[in-house]
Length: 477
Ligand code: URA
Image 1 (cartoon, protein in one colour):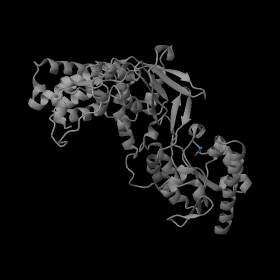
Image 2 (spheres, helix red, strand yellow; image 1 turned 180 degrees about the vertical axis):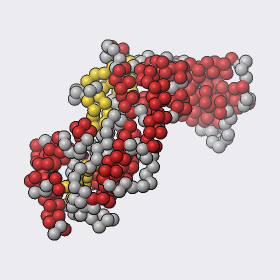
Image 3 (cartoon, helix red, strand yellow; image 1 turned 180 degrees about the horizontal axis):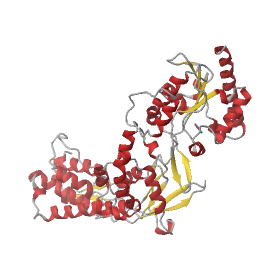
Image 4 (tube, helix red, strand yellow; image 1 turned 90 degrees about the vertical axis):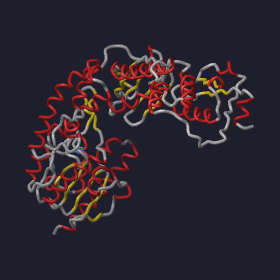
């Protein structure tokens, strides 16, 4: 039967929406129905959990248009309003949108008619959804709980008026990218573990922790991630209009941070941190320059740059990932638990640390604040690549014969690409300055293992150091 025959016969169509907020699904079905000239009073739009049995006489198989290329008229204004209206809680929203789309075919400027009651209703729904989204941005308040593994998890309860939770997830992911959090709502929940966003079904208020919101913590966290070189007031205002700032725990800091930002940025420029043109020619000059480096956001955390340590003519240069908490406090590389593993292994291999230049691929400690603790965060490939400037400058001065890169970040720092430790270890890799690179695991990795796996990795680590020692014996008379 053709689409036209269907319509002539008065077929009634039922569209079951898979999700309450699926604008794309609605748009595809609506286009198909308009192309088949199905008037609004012949279509029922049923949302999940809606009463489809009322329309049991309806046909769930939609007609196929005779001409699927037929152009459908929908003004930009209609589409932008429709995108929001699809999230409204009114069960009639999809029917209303379809009715409007239908009318737009004969009157493409209909959305400009402020006297039209359907236009006004859609505009009110659009406004209400936008207001709800802003409310969610401004009023979500997290409480801290510990999960089964003792990690901090932030949980908030929010009651949206509309189906906006999934849509607004991106805002919270961007704002709290490094935290683990859940937002529970009666319309469904979202969960972020620092990497993946997960959804789950509706929750009740009693599922969320009670007590004081962790606002102090947010403030500290926000101040620690605030990077003056990245300040974009326009973007901040777009995400969160100024009138809502007063509701955000961290907002009290914004005027102060904004005012301080320019000063901090010009200090960085004065210190030469913004230019990478002239490579420092002494280790002392590198040491001074890295303290002012803000080429990546890590330098703007509360930390200090940690310079490499050792003789400026060492034949062996050891490269780790980045300073840890203890190294940051001491201002020296490898003095914490990973340093102890390294020291013990060097001793076993017969390599004297005092004759070795020990440094890191990334000069600042990257962490996320969790209560009083600063938890290590791996640097991104981009951060490692930006920091190459500094260890290459160190290498150009020290001129080691052998470089030992410990762990994937250090290996990337030396080679400019990500390599597998298992594949890269055990053989020298020639470097452009005539020296050679050896790759091994990071001592922190050994600290995280237990039992057989630990024993095996310790054995491989010791074998790598022994090979480096032997090679040094061959290269250095
Ligand atoms: N881990 C590193 O990679 N470097 C240090 O200095 C300490 C721990």
